[in-house]
Image (cartoon, rainbow, N blue to C red):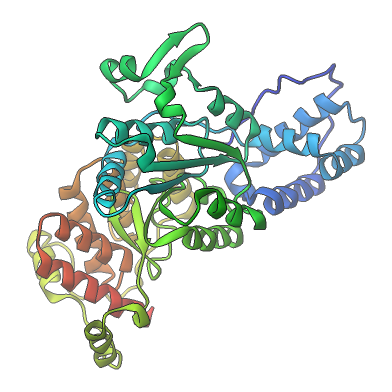
Length: 436
């Protein structure tokens, strides 16, 4: 998803654009936050003003007051305002490593259950949902074995998704053989094969609306095995973000998995979510839900202050002798501006550019643990687990109770079959959570 200007086809003769002052921007930002959860700092003042002028061009509002009244009371104007801010953008198999994990997860589940349920939200114009369906069909699964529901707040995007027509831009990471097998060239674009389109139900819905959650569960006839919610959380205010995360948790099965965007892995509360694959997470079991032996171990250690994982520190110090053994100063945090810039690049799919920006900032100060962790996640997205592991180890050295880094290291250890290291990292992460 991106947030840019969207040209409406329903324009009328326009007057001179109204001058929109700070007070009006503030009121419009409050409306956007309330209705779709977006944070003004994320979408930008200029985007908000352009959207307001788009509505003015449609409605011929002559004063600011008239424009504001239309945005509040006229559902057509309000929807046009939202469409002008939210411009969904995606492409087939965006970040292929993520789709490899998704396909493996779903095929594994189909060994023990007759059907898997998937939610793609926001779904943009349908590329993500179609990619999942395509990969499952290529893996030999039948249409009856999976159910995909795809939603987006943009009615324009949903209408395009329902048409099953995709532009050439949607195929930037798909080879010609695959493209020609599942898509047919038409005068208006590439039409997806019926067997793919029939497996997806597209709906225009707002995930923040109270009734959406129950409606999705009813339509799916149960909770979801997988939810893809990529590049949405990053745009939300903190309050709306937390609300949506709670909603997503309720929509998932207890063992279900959530896929987020490359810039959003650091947003999920590490005390509640644990990584399972590239940008994929599942809800962590609470102490009361854990096996009795694990509960006992936590209780026995709850009165002990956790110590730095000595084995990992030793390895890191050996590889990085210039890092001091004792840190007496506070761990610096990356500037909010740098984090936002990295998030924007990652959200746009420019993973390599995001990596380079992280590296540039770390050259001046290599002890920014939040940026180290983000860089590690970006390398995981690119499939470079070796580099990611080294960065995560450095983050843990600098901040021994960094839950996200510890849980990510546990995932890497699990991938290579090192169950001892996996348990050690998870134990350290659970201890860190007790004192954070």
